[in-house]
Structures are given as C-alpha cells and as structure tokens.
Image (cartoon, rainbow, N blue to C red; front, top):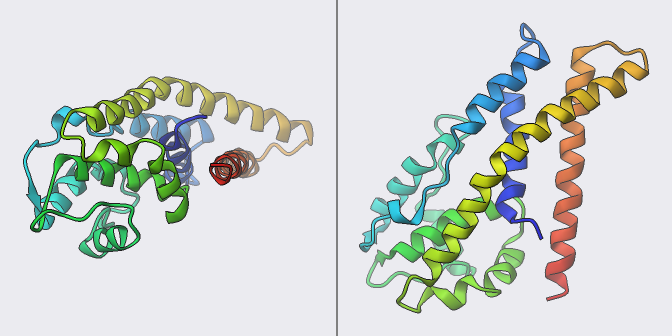
Length: 213
C-alpha cells in the first residue's frame, strides 16, 4: 500500500495548483511554478528533531516552523494546543509526561498532520496500531527508524510526482483538444478533477484495507 503521506502530497498538489492559478499565466507556467514550490517541500528528518523533552508551546513552535512550507495561507496554524489536547483525548497521541513531550511525540504529531488530511481519527488510530504505538515507548530508536523510512519514501517519490503532474497535464490537454475545446481553463479543470478522483479512489482503498484489520 502506498504510504499515506503520498496521499497528502497529492492533496497538496491540488492546493498549490489552485493557489498558483493566475488568469495571466499559461497552464505550463502554473505547473512550473507549482513544481518549483513542490520541490522545496521537505518533511523534517528525525535527526533534526531535538532529542529533549519540550513543553507544549515549544513543541508547537518547532513543528510550525519545520512544516511552514506546507501552509496554504501564511497565517494558517499547523498545530495548536486545542489540536494536541484533542489528539490525546481521542487516543491518537500518548499523554505528556509532567507537561513535557518527547521526540517521539513530535514525530507522531508530524505524521498525524499528514494523515488527518486523508483519514478520520478512527482510521489514523487503526493505522498507527499496526506499528507506531508499539514503538512509541520502547526507549530505543524504533520509532525514529520507522519515521525516517516514511520520510525517505516521500523524498524518493518527489521526482515521480513531478513527472506524473507533467504527464497528467498533457493527458488532460489531449483529452480536451479531442473535444475541440482549446480552452486552458477547461484543461486545468480536467487536470485537477483527475487528481481529485485519484485521491478519492486511493482514500477509498485505504479505508477498505483498514476496515479489514
């Protein structure tokens, strides 16, 4: 099964394409702008996460800074105290230890940020029950290794996603041209709708598998 963060990247494809859409630009220019931005997106690696306990404010500030490039709007809040308390209440996030959060908390919160764009809380818990929660309290590098596997997968897939976007735009253009609709807005609509449908079907498959667990 393709990693769920890959699904979140597909959602980001849509967000950024809409964000960069400009009636004065051609679709090719819009795609090139989006690709340039996309290539600058990086999920923080475990080695760059402090291996010390943090208070909630410190943790939210750290995650907000490290994931800033994923914001759609500049003033978006990626993580708030309310969110953290809600994740803990719904048993997605283990509670803090004397109001301090560990490196494992930070890694799990970053993953939840991506998962929640695709999955319900119940499905996130089912997914994390497969491996993450078993690694959380081991006191070794188990969770860091698992986290880095996911990060490396997404780094490896970046080129694939960029190539796929270019092919999808050309495919949409050819389909629209076949109906004698030489209209860039129609091309962009078709292109984005194609991605939306892929997201839907992948989400459906993920939910189907999780329901079988």
